[in-house]
Structure formats: structure tokens, C-alpha cells
Length: 449
Image 1 (cartoon, rainbow, N blue to C red):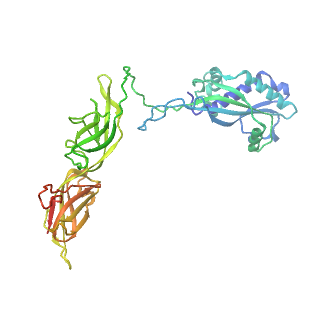
Image 2 (image 1 turned 90 degrees about the vertical axis):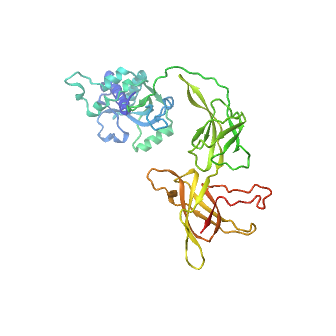
């Protein structure tokens, strides 16, 4: 591949090709004056100072090459590491203009120049090396070239995969008019050509994958697992706690390689699982945190030698609410606030399962347990401390949080904790013969003061 100097190198080779044609055809004798070949913008040619005839090659447009623009891999992988150097493929569009002081001179020059380009439709590697390489052996070498030409000798244009081809183009009267109006100079006899293709590639180092040691083709029946709903194994209305067993209902769930992803933890299906119902015990998954958790069934496919699990079939993602379990206590007696009403301040210590994260939202809920079941009781909500009381550098979770409260009237209160919207449970009287059947029995609770 050539490098960023390739555009200028193509212009230099074309100019040299035209200059050789002028010399070979002895055009100076034909028109009776000197003939110069330049590669300037039209507005840089001063007609008032023009003493002879002149051919000018001007690069007026550069466009992406349609055939090469999608060749090669993307430059970087998903981690941002460079894996390839795809070429930048360009087409170069030129205007070949002839200038003459006498009549017919411009036409003669343009005719000979068009003939040269017609007879040389491809820039051969030898022609490129002859133009851009050192024309003489040392001690002269490339030092006799202008500095700009010395730089172009490093373009590596002769080494690119595809040769540069010269193709005449047709410009409408409107297109030519717009071009020369943009140049802000008077129009002169002009022909348009396209040089295709220039391949520019960087030499930055890339990352290459190791070769494949063996070929592997695996044909598997399509078994896409699907989750319909998630609930507690003992019933759809039973709250899910850290000691629960999940029941996942759906289709095509059971597989020898099936794994269940709960939050960020993986677990195998428990005994008793079927194709339409997977059971998963949450007790071993100690890394779970209370709140809304996602569930997904994964079916990896063993591949390679020795076989190793690879990503295979995956179900849709379902969700459930994991309720926290708490044990409340008063680490110190509550103290009176003072003032007209007798209220108390203090701290309720919550021991939580599962452990609560540093960034999770925690609230303490206190509901009075009145002596008369029909009597309305007082209720309070208090936010947890900043970072849930975690002050140790690097610690991300804890199982004990001290939540401060203030302005609480003396009574016995039912205690709940709300973690990321998931509330802990209260004990309910399930004895149908009890006068408090179906009511909260008062656990867990605290008495203030």
C-alpha cells in the first residue's frame, strides 16, 4: 500500500508523463516556442507573463473509490484496540488545460497531451519508480531533485496492490462553467481525467489473532429457552426472600448445560426441574442484593479440544423482587427530645440479609402496634445514613446499618426496612382460632423508649 504522499505522487507521475510526451514529440519545434508542463491551480497561472505555451494539470476533486471503500476489517475491536489498517481508497479528478499565445497552439498541445494519456492508460510500476526514484546513481542520487520530489520518493506508490488507471471523463457545459467560475479566471481548452485508484494505508502496528489450530463445525438443534414468569417455588403470592427457591416458568428451559443467571450470580438448576419449570435455590447466592433482580436462562455450548463452554442460547430477561430479612434492635436507649411533647430520638440497628450495598437506598419504617386492633397507629419513615454507614475505604457492602430517628412518640413499633423499593416482611398470625388471625403479630418490633 502507498502512504499519504500518494496523491502528490500520482500528480508528479502524470506531469512527468506529459513532459516526456512534449520532449518525445518535439512540441517546441511544432509550435515554434517553449512548452512548459506545470501542476498549478488555474488562478496561479499569470497569462500576462506567459511567453510560450503551457500544459497545466490541476487536481480539482478527490472522491472515495466505490469498489475499495468497504474493503478490510474495522480499524478497532470492541475494546478499542487496533486490529487492522484498512486502506483509504481515493479517485483523483484532474483538469488538463492548454495555454498558447498564438492561434492553434492550445489545440495542438491539448491534442498531443490527450494522445499521450490515451496511449498510457495505466501507470506502470516501472514508470512510477522512474519518476519518483533517484534518476542517477551516487554520488548524485536523489539530491539533484527538488525537495518536494525527494519527499515523494517515499510515497511507495509503485508498491500498492492495484495500479493507477487513467480514464477520460465527460463534463457537461454546466459543470465546466461552474468550475471555471470558481477559479475566477478565463476559460481555456480543457479535458477532464480520472486517476483510479489510490490506496493510502497507515503503518501503525496492529493486533493479530493467533492462527486457528483446528476446524470446528457444530450442528445443534435450535432450542431457544423462553421465560414466561418467575415466582416463589411454594406459590405465586409468596414473597421471595434470600432463603427462597425460585420457580421459573417457560418453554425449553431444561438442558444438561443450562445455567440460571440471577443478578450477577450464576447457579445450576435445582433438582425437580423440568422443560417448562426450573427451580433455583437462592440460599447459596450470597452475592445477591435486595431489590429488583433480573433472571435469565443460559445454555452454553461446549466447543474445542478439550471442550470448553462457549456462548450459546439465551432466554429473554425476566425480573422479580427480592425482599430483605431484618433483625432490629436498639443499640442504646432512646433519649427524650424535650419540648412540649414527649418524643424520643435514637438509633435503630438493622441486621440485614442479604448484605446491603453502599449505593443502595435504605429506609426505616416504623408502624405503631396499638393495643386495640381497630385503633389507628402512628407511622414514621426515616432514611438510612450516607453510604449506609460504610466508612472503610474499599468496603462496598455491609450487613449492619444504624439508622437514626427523631421525634418518635413512645410506643411499640413494627419495624420494616425498604431497600431499593423492596420491603422486608412482617410476621402474620396464621392461627384461625386466634382473635388476631390474619393480623401482624408484632415481629419484628422495637419499643421506644
